[in-house]
Structures are given as structure tokens and as C-alpha cells.
Image 1 (tube, rainbow, N blue to C red):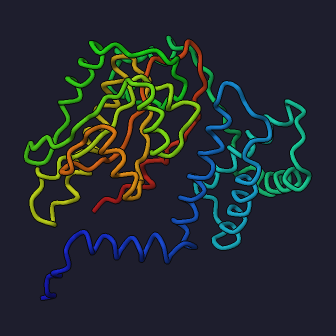
Image 2: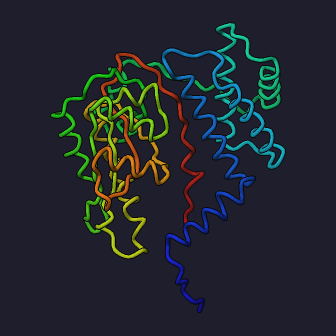
Image 3: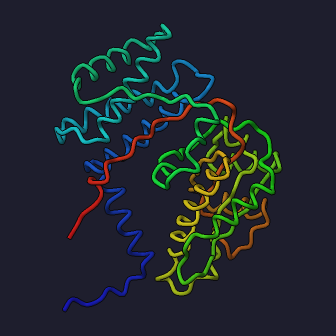
Length: 313
């Protein structure tokens, strides 16, 4: 029988991250994931109310190059590549409809790629909704309710009443947690100056996150977790809680979008000082939330078919 590894879980995780996320940068999975990350930033530019035409041209060049590298290496058209091509096509259509001239080399690259891949993509469409349309399904079946929740970036800058947020947090408490530890903590920030500082620390999500009222900082209490084998439990629990929190926000007609927190040691220290977070807690993520504008745009953010990610035995 093979001997059980004595390497701590966090060290095994780090080794795997280095092995599969860093050294395998040309694998199909890595390239497709990078496509999604890249086209999502283009989607956000397509969805903003006041569009800045000609945005993202360096990113678009890199994305087109990534598409060619993937097709040359693997020769197939998985859904994530087709979704990428659909976003490139929407970017192209937007600028042509507005008679905005992209740089010659970029326009030629877009035209050549879309012609070569014709039949392997459908035009991506940014949705334009009213607040009433967006929240129309919150009292329907869970399938309809869940499908209707999307990330929203268009907040009107007014405060969500604390009485509403109290109902949101009470509903979110239904989330399961390991051994019922309930180690997740939430810091709800309404102060405008604090929000600006937090947004700068987070990832400079200016243009929408600093209009959040409130901005939620999600943390986990490390004292709730025992040995090194349990250290990732706080992140798992916080993730489960956050999804329930996002549903609770949607149910109470509060617009929201989760934001990552990939910070260095200096930023970690600064956020603890700004919010007086105990050293025993670790920040996991943010959620920007607020009252939505009367009308706004949504990026399509297509989901993979479940059959692509499920394996039965």
C-alpha cells in the first residue's frame, strides 16, 4: 500500500498551483481560461452605459493572438473559444455601427479571424434591462430565480437601507458551514472615503465599485479552524456563504457583484487597519452592492454546458 503523504495540505496545494497553473501555461485548459478572463474584460467595456469607443485595443490584439495559438495547437472549437469569438464579433459590430475606425492592423485581424472561424460563433449580445425587468423573477421557481441573477455594475450611488441589509444578512445565514462553525464575517461599509480607499486596495475597480452603498468585505475567522489540514476550510465556507448572500441580495432587490481579493501583505495590513479587522481574520473577497439604476446593461457571461464539467462513475 502506498504510504500516506505527510506534506501539509497547503504545501501540496502550492506545489499543484506551481505545477498546473504556472508551468503548464500552454495547456488547453490554461489557454481557454485565459481567453475567458480576457474576453470578460472586453464584455465589461461593452456593457457600460457611457461607452468609450476604441477601448481595449491592446487586449483585443492579445485575445486574437491567443485564439490563433489555441486553434493552431488544438484545432477544435470548444464552447469557451466560441464564446470568445462571439464577444470579438460584438466588439467589431459595435464599432462598425458607430463608424468608429479601429487601428488598421486590429481591424484586419478581427476581420480575418471572424471570416476564418465563420460558423463557429454566434454574435454575443449585451442585454439592456430595466430594474423592473431584472427583478421580475424573484418570486418564481428557484430555477427561474437563480437564472435571473447576474452581476450588476450600475449602481445609482444611494444607500441601500440598513433595514433591508439586515433582512439580507438574516437570509444569508441559512448557508451551511463546516460543523456549523459559521466562521464568516462581513464588514458593510457605507462611508464614501473608506469605500474609495478599499476599491484602490482591491483592484482599482473604479467606475462602479466606488458607487456601491454598501461595499461588503467578506472575511473568515481563522480561530475557527484547527490544524493545517483545515486551513482552507475558511475559504470554502466563505465561498458558500457568499453565494447564499448573493441570492439573498437578489431576493431583496439589491444589485450586486462579487469582487476578488488577491492582495499582497501590505494591502492585507492596510485593510485590517482601515476596518479594524482583527489579526485572526483573513479577508476573502468583496461584494459591491447597491440600488440599481432604472436602466442598465448586462454582459452575457455565458455558462458552460453542465455536461462539460460533470463526470459520472
